[in-house]
Image (tube, rainbow, N blue to C red; front, side, top):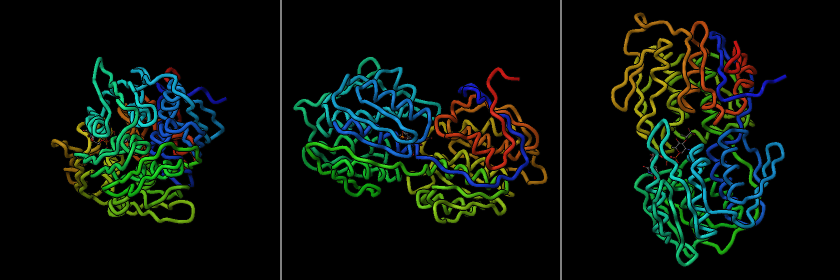
Length: 433
Ligand code: EPZ
């Protein structure tokens, strides 16, 4: 009988096998979180399909239930309906579990004219401020005060007013919050230097299915013509591009080949070319992408907002480049502390040097380089955890990755998928021998 999985479980990996086979790439975590929040915008039912079973998604659903939304689930479908608001208060103990909860702010203000949400606070990879969210909401007419760690916001005359908003940085969350605030505002809103990630266009597609009028999502300027009300809709969550990119690099790292069902190459932006130059050969086929590996080549990259190379694939690329013949560099420009996987990879023998926001990989000639050997390592954040497993799959001997709750946030059925691809991995409970 399958034991109840716990976040304190560990993954025991024996390296050395090339991954082969077919796995499905589930619905996108970063697309469905704001889309679930969009259910606050209308009194009718929003039916969402292909919802991934992830702890972050459960946290967002818990928050919506707390706010007064009724929720029914049926396998991978979820029915959300917000007739009336039970409370406009999103408490610390719910928001701290999943900082993307902050995107309930826009829909609450847009439809109900009030919201009180705990400041999300930072996380392992950075301070994660929300100043751009608040600046834009004020331009739309919200009055905002910060007190006792909470953002209290109210719309004085009951309805937000469309405005021109220039984002200082193409923030994904700020773009999503402002889009959802603006769809019910009076008049036209333009968001300039908006984020262009595929998740933005997917949120816009869902909002437009609900009767909104969002134009230009995916471009640098999004124009939103406010409506008086939205209606229910059905929307199917697209495959998770970060999950797909992660597994593509994992298969390549082991020298294997696989078919990633549901994945679309177009969602990788420039990452497709970057991974190809690193030796990850991907082809779009009917219903998914095929992946195989030639030799892993050294490259130099800088993470950037979409369509640049995504910060969410940085840790995974670093693990891959540890296997390249020559010297590579990765510069992380999006988050200030997203190299926590480095000391853990170094414990496995990876040759990495940190110089400020840049990691240099393989500074010594391949003949002098230490062998990659399995070790006890600690997951520190969602994507870093995946990079530890990648190296564990190619290192000699056994690697044990602790604190799998990080992985459970963003990788659905990870152990099952790895076993399907022929990996020698076992998920063990914390106290099991
Ligand atoms: C989203 O986070 C994703 N999360 C992140 O994925 C992803 O790394 C990030 O976008 C960048 O692509 C979800 O979609 C749930 P940002 P978000 O606002 O919206 C600064 C994962 O692994 N900033 O684009 O929080 C911020 O500090 C997660 O799935 C401000 O300064 O990202 C950061 O340095 C990790 N002020 C940069 O901008 C603000 O008001 C990018 O943040 C907002 C952001």
